[in-house]
Length: 145
Image (cartoon, helix red, strand yellow):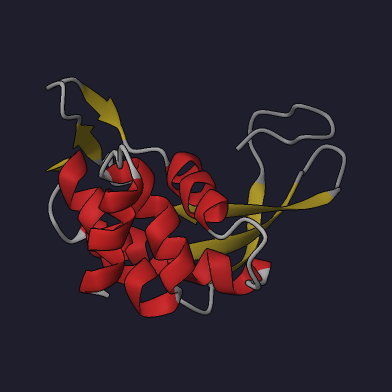
C-alpha cells in the first residue's frame, strides 16, 4: 500500500480488525519513511452483473439502486440510516442470486421490500418500474395492496 503522505511504495500494518458486520477489515498502517499513520479498509468485490431487458449486460451499480429507492421515498419520512439499511438488505438479497442476474429480479426484489416498508414509496417505484401509463394502472396496483 502506497503512503498517501509521502508516496513511499511500502507501508507496515500495525493493527487489523474486522468491522461489526464482518464483511470488511480495517487496517491501521504506518509509513516507515515519514512515520505517519493512516487507515485502509479491505472489502471483497463480487463483480455482480445485471442483464437489462434489452439484453445488454452491465456492472451492478449500488448508487443507482440507492438513488432509485431514495427517489421513491422523496418527501416521505425516512432517515438516512433506515434508507441505507433498506438498500443494503435489498443488495444482500440480490447478491444471493448469483454473479449475473436479470434486472427484473432486482426490480421485483425492490418492490417486495418497498411493499413491506412504505406503500407510497412502493407505488412510486412501481409506477416507473412497471411503466404505468394512466390512472387505471395505479388503481389496479392499489387494489392489490
